[in-house]
Amino acid sequence: MCLSGSYSGEHCEIVENNLEKHQILAKSFSYVAMTSIGVVVGYFLSMDVLKYVFGIDPIKQVQPKPSRRKRPKRKQATSFVRFTYVDVQPENIQE
Image 1 (cartoon, helix red, strand yellow):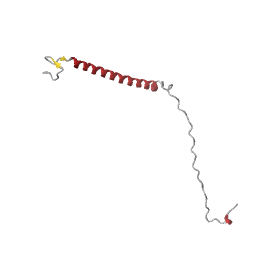
Image 2: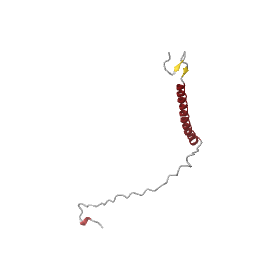
Image 3: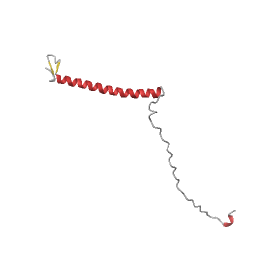
Image 4: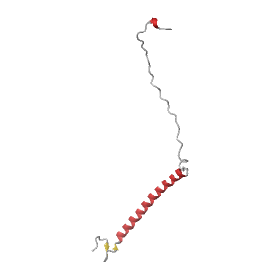
């Protein structure tokens, strides 16, 4: 007696056609996903090797140079100082 209805035969060795299609589709999807991840990781590794091992930066030619805009200087807050003289006698002032 087979556990699933998708298998049959004396030793459950016969697989239904529908289940076989699903197994092939799942395998092909996983192969595509693993290949895609491998390509992305390989790209980044090759860019790092070019930049840090050989000193070649392939992106440098594509990147725009940063503009050096001068920032306007901030105006300092105007402060007024008023001196107050205490205990000053007119005869003690020297000219």
